[in-house]
Image 1: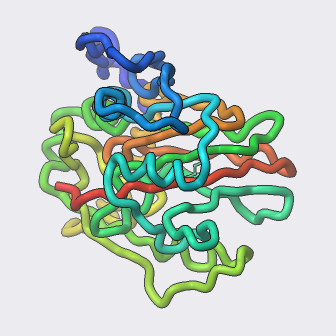
Image 2 (image 1 turned 60 degrees about the vertical axis):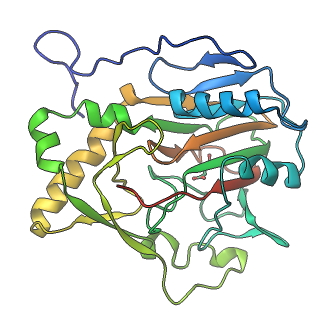
Length: 293
Ligand code: SIN
């Protein structure tokens, strides 16, 4: 892993946000670079416009936001997601009965795998990948089961100018086939004939912040388009290793009834399955997004 040390101090320098204080929310940052716990809000109660605006702002400024001690029903979880856009239906994962937008996240002693064990961006194989994901964990193991999040603006900004110039205008193929085929068979989910596949820019511009973010991930990105296979493999290997630098990350320690809301346009995440044979379970609501540019 590169040290990101330049000749004079760190090569990546995060510029802290100095904007106006929030009126309705308490923001407690996990690190200067990514993640904040949001207090002063009860998601089981109707939210005012000012709170909703400040939630949008908190997500834009912190890339992933967390809420503690929330007691919401499945319908309230879905309604919270709809405040941010239409809801996305996962192409493979199981959902709660009669609620296709409410994905089941669960691992227990009988699970052959857990969701999201490798670094990924949710469903980046879709032509219009999800904007955000809202995970509500209701049952936690006694220890472990953390989720790691990494800031892809920071990963982009820390690249050398030469690498940024090389990647500018390149696209990559994202494919759901390997990630999804057979993955949920133990839960009785039948495979689809085909899974989504899409070509996206390697560097995407966030439609809200207008900032550039690295947009390739180990879970779905198979190759760079228009360059020889060995070159694509080498560059992707470098980018995957680069984005995993802990400097860009925060790690969220779940407690029961916590919620994480991450912005898939500028964040990758990875779930730790270090708690077998214990159970960790909850639901994810995923907000639809638009075509990366
Ligand atoms: C996922 O949505 O990728 C799962 C994340 C988690 O379980 O922490």
